[in-house]
Length: 207
Length: 207
Image 1 (cartoon, chains in turn yellow, red):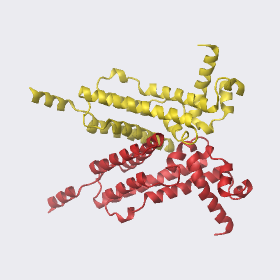
Image 2 (cartoon, chains in turn purple, blue; image 1 turned 60 degrees about the vertical axis):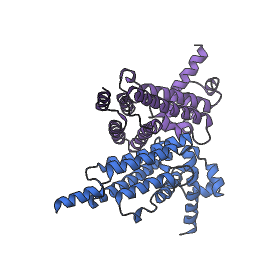
Image 3 (cartoon, chains in turn yellow, blue; image 1 turned 90 degrees about the vertical axis):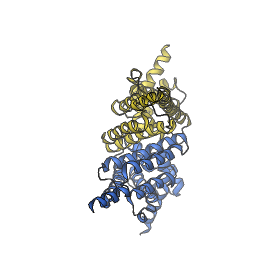
Image 4 (spheres, one colour; image 1 turned 45 degrees about the vertical axis):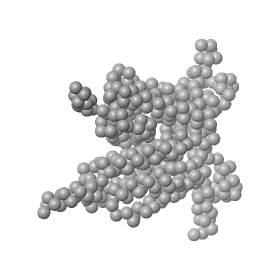
């Protein structure tokens, strides 16, 4: 990596928690200058605009949060348990200061900031695709009920988590987020998981 | 109402959709001047600060949205049906341009805007209290299951609606919001409503 590239990466990493906490409009160049120790020219040598820096900072914050939410997932063979672990990761593991980048940036980016809006939409689509593919693999493997609408289930999980986080942010405590965790755990057991007894009963019927 | 009071009310009503669409930081005094036809001095004669105007504008937007979401409620005697109508109102009736004021303002107000944050918290608490009291009345009347945790149910409904709206905002279509409506309708039927057959069975047992 060239020295210029290294500086660019460092600016993104240092600006990411600022944008995540204060939003696109609320995060000033002054703050970014203070955090990076660079002058305006030193920052804008690496980025065409504040919009470009904010978009890169969002991707950085999102990748950081996503990696936390994927911890332990690949070691869990059962797909319902894997989704439950993902939900528990969302609720209990913190990313960058400021909370979930999707929640923080979606509304901020919705008016007149198409570059940032595009990144937010991509982040949501990646999250939906990750949940859908886990559910579809589970349907193939016989661990997830085949009759579910995987798109609706993915949105229910994402919407539940983000809505719970919104209430927790307003109340400044984790109660709503933990209520969401309990609700989604029960929802997965009663609506999503294909229980082993059903699989056994079916294979018995085949014999 | 004095002429000064009338002008103040008019400024609030005209600023409300601007703050609701562009956020506290994103809404400029210039826009408010253009919408109201007033100079800076003409606006700040009625408000101590942008923060005060934004707080009043939030209350205006929230009251407008809340009244839409309460349409027809008082005519529905069954409490489970009343909550279903409230959810349907949220999904199908639009308030001011820009969508739900709670979703729009919560994140925006969370950093360094205590007056606005206080109004958002009050709005959430009123919404929670309205749902809780409907559920508690229903428990008394025998239309709602007595074993539910009314606080958790209220948060599940609010979080589900706000999370579904967040996804719909990012995707710019109503799919997630309508999935939320379907999910919450089923949830109310399976977890919240005390079915008439249960009531009948109990009264039969008493006889």
